[in-house]
Length: 140
Image (tube, rainbow, N blue to C red; front, top):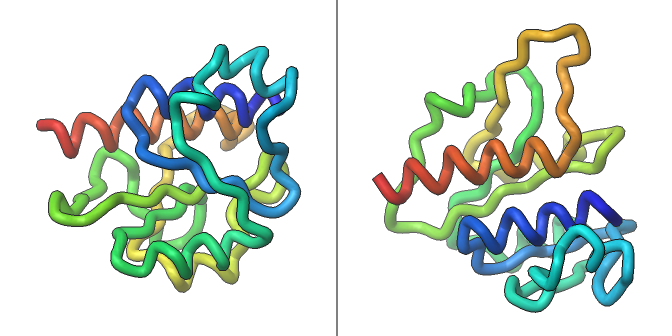
């Protein structure tokens, strides 16, 4: 729930239009989300869908990106984004990442290059890093 709250707060900072919370992801209102969101769960629109696929189906005209480490992924700094479409960013859960079956529905898969021994960030940190780069690319 703290990750969800942190993602809301970061999304508010970068003017994210909407967050889709899917599957087992916790949803507001909840005090543990509010603790890290600091009210951003009220300033950023959100919707719950039972599955991520359900959310993707609603966003057909968008440019869908997944944040995952897979063969063929594009390093974050090299990502080219269309300026005439809404950008959708799929982030996976803390342990398993993005469901492999969803990658076929994405226009591109983004990877944050990492150089340590763990090769993973906390999901809210990954989201923040990626939103910062996307924000800079579309506001350049």
